[in-house]
Length: 156
Ligand SMILES: [Fe+2]
Ligand SMILES: [Fe+2]
Image (cartoon, rainbow, N blue to C red; front, side, top):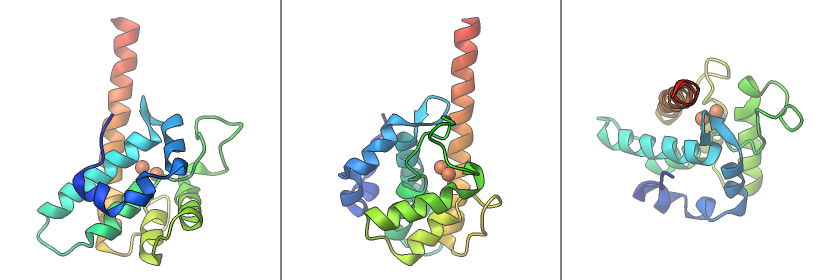
């Protein structure tokens, strides 16, 4: 399991310690990757990329929003528990849950809500654009790894 990086651990200590976030370990996001593993991987990648970019990024805001960007707290593969219009609305669900459970800023909330652009509202800050791109890259990698696993099981 992927561990939170130093930046993610230092800026998200109270989120990582929360039993609510741990609920993400029980739900799959892509392939065989849980929502928790996906969120940590996205937050870690955002932190690494922010360090390498030539312009100013609020690391605290970015990694907190990244860790909570899929904090919708249900299994979207399960029709009985999933909520309507998951693809377009889960950013809003995640933002509402994050506002309820943690002291997130308005900027962090907006970043969470826009991460599904173009299926959701357009990102309005550097941090929001960064999360939007990183999430798509990591999601693609996890989905491809899941498909590869399935193919190996069928043909292996
Ligand atoms: Fe998402
Ligand atoms: Fe995501």
